Length: 102
Image (cartoon, rainbow, N blue to C red; front, side, top):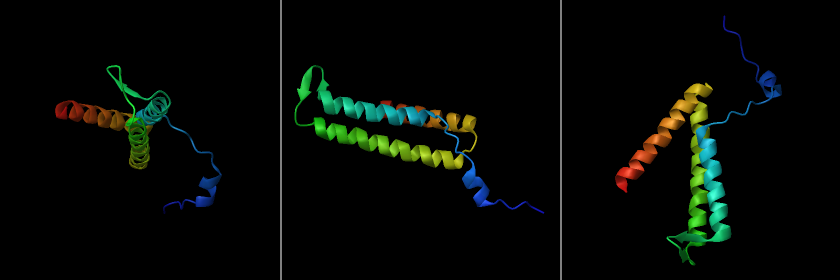
C-alpha cells in the first residue's frame, strides 16, 4: 500500500530557498528599474526626459513576469539541477530570439 502524505506534517517543515538563474534576472530587472527611476534613461548620452517613468514601469513588469515564470518552472522541476538547466536554456533561447529579431 502507498503511504499517505499528511499535509500537516509538511506544513511544519521549513521551506528550502533555492537560488536559480531567473532569481538573478528578476533582481537585475528590479535593480535596473530603480537605477533608471533615480538617474533617468539615457542612450548615447541623450536623456529621455519624458520616457524614464515608462521605461521604469516596463522593467518592473519584466521583473514580475520573470518572477512568475520562475515560480512556474519550480512547480514543474523539483530538482535544483534540472531547474538550473531548464532556466539557463530558457534564458539562452530568449537571448537568441532577441538577437534574431533585432
